[in-house]
Length: 205
Image (tube, rainbow, N blue to C red; front, top):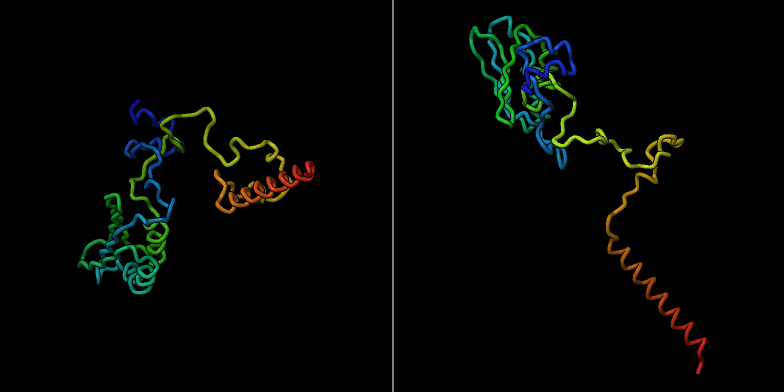
């Protein structure tokens, strides 16, 4: 089945009416955040005009907030490129090679700060698309989407205590630790010594 034929299964029926919007599944950088989070925004270029009124908000943002943004995000390279009599734009480049252009004509300082901090900085870099489904797996299962209560006792459904539960939150290693192995070995040696003493006491010479 082609992607365009799957529009009717989109999670957002309003977006399904737009034939120009690509169709696909959720995509993101694999394993990002498993060890540590890596911001996908690599380079940010702000192009503006020094004289035009449409770039007033950009000039205010550069003067008041751009330095703080650069200090808070040292992994993002920021370029400022003045151009005469041109529309202000923001060019964002991501680690996956994608480049996004955004027109910020007549934007205020607050609006530009929101778009940069809350949108461009947190994006994965993939193009916006309408989602066929909220999840996608290569091998579907009858169990459905995994959840923390899968294959757990049903008594947790009526748990009266507040979460987290100490009994369920305790780490259970697959193999005993070195300290635990030494403790078990010491108990076995102690038990064997007690058995030998018991045998000797029952059969005195």
